[in-house]
Amino acid sequence: MRAPDELRALVEQGLADLTPTASLDGLSEAMRYALAGGGKRIRPVLCLATAEAAGGRAEDALPAAVALELVHTFSLVHDDLPAMDDDAERRGRPSAHVVFGEGPALLAGDALLAEAVRLALTYGTTGIARELVE
Image 1: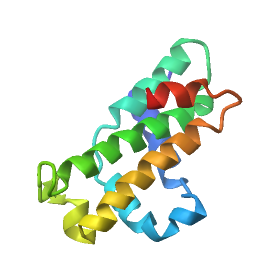
Image 2: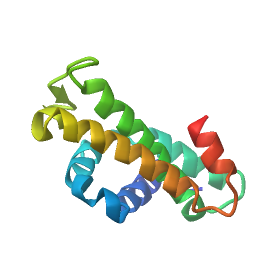
Image 3: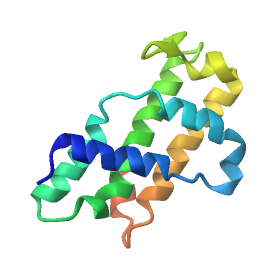
Image 4: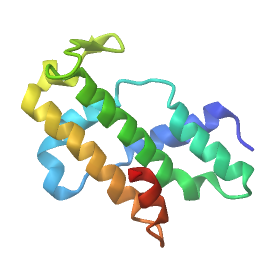
């Protein structure tokens, strides 16, 4: 099993390689901004570590792990919105709605969720997507 830092690097590469669906391209800057906020990436690292512990390959679980991070980031973007907690900062930098405006931040959060489902549906079964949305 790989060390958490190695798995985190795999997640960061998976996020960097993420290419949003063409119809979401106008939101990609706000999406990337929200994802670039950092954090420990504990959810996707746990996903990859679990895959390895179960005898699988972390690389095969990467789409699911990245999807988890996208859902988490979506929840943070929406939580920061003026209609929710109205937080001007997230992890020491301006929240997405402060930088891009409330409407684009809301749509970027929605797009992160849509991309998460799209990634979960890249597997040969709908089970992973079903688990993600439940």
